Structures are given as structure tokens and as C-alpha cells.
Length: 235
Image (cartoon, rainbow, N blue to C red; front, top):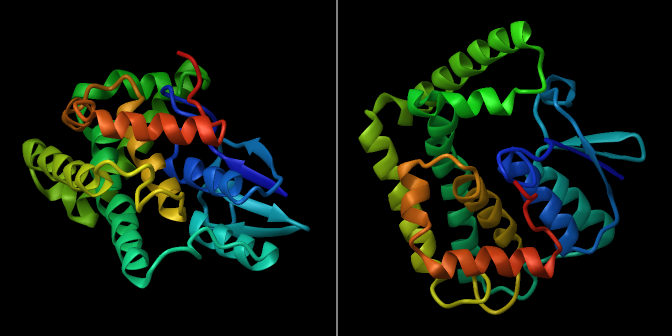
């Protein structure tokens, strides 16, 4: 199986929290795969990365890749959870991927205070083309955040929304080894990918400054990295 993901960038194992999520899920499930670094989402079956190629079949979206893996290999990282824990995990996954994600998109692609990091992200593209790509990417991101709704607020409110999300994640984590207790579950891959894209890039957003105050969160990230050999790349 080949897993097509965004390459390392901004001191993360991947530029995409969804790429990190699905790679961690495969590692947690102890499934053999080959990571293939992609840079052109339009080549994917739904115009996005990540996607999986298994026996010639392309499976798009981290959620459905995991469903495919569960069925094919008869693995379930959540088999030990109660119904209440499953509900909590799903709610936090939605918070990370459908709300906090957009606050981070705003920080990374829209907020002019961090324009220089967009240049770093696209540094492998020749200069003339790079400017066109950056302009197009920033415009599409700004439109997406606006139509999602979060982008209709001013900067301070957007970052407050993101910090509020981080706070409830930290509160739920508490002193747990993993997000829902003493055993890893699928939501840990979601939480890791979401937090890593906020904390590890050298982009001092209000969300990053706030998140780095919490020692339990930093210990949680290191614990997952150690157990599943998934430390971020060196700067």
C-alpha cells in the first residue's frame, strides 16, 4: 500500500494535519505501508491529500482510508472504548477538523502577520511561479475560511475561538496518558495532527503561544512520538 501525503514542512512530519493523522493511524494499527511524498493535491481522487493506493484502488480522505484499513485488516483502535468515550472522541475529532482547523488555516494562510512563512512553505517552487502560486493559495484559503464562517470575524475573535478549542482539548486530556484514558485510540491521531500543526511550526500565533503553556499537552505529543516513532523533523 502506498500512502500519498504532504511532505515535511514547518517542523512537522507533514504540512497537513490529515496526512499526519492517517500515517499515525496506520502506525497505531501496525499496518505496513509506503509513504509517498506528494505536492500536487489535484492528482488525488478528490483533489486533496492524503489518499491511499491499495491494489490499484485509490481511497481518498483520512477518515475513509481508516475505514478501509479497519475492514481489510479487521483492526479497531477503539474496541476498548465505552459508548460515552466513543461519543467524546467523535465530538473532539469534529472540533479539531471542522473548527480548530479553520482557525489554523486563517493563521497560516490568511493573516498577513505570517506572510513570510508562506514563502518558506513554497520555497521549492521557482521564484516567478512561486508568487503566482502563493497569491492563488492565499486567495482560495481566504475565501474558504470566509465561506466556512470563521473568516467573517476579526483577527482577535478568530484567535480567541482557536484558543478556546485548545483549552477544552487540554481540559479533556488532563493527566491521561492518552486522550481518552490509559490506552491509545483513533482520536489520538486526530488530536496529535491538529496540535502539532499549531505548536511545532515556528509561527508565533496566539494559539501557539497559548498552547505551549500546557505541560500536559507537550508531554502528550512527546509520548505519542516516542511510542510510534513519529518525532518531527529537525529544524
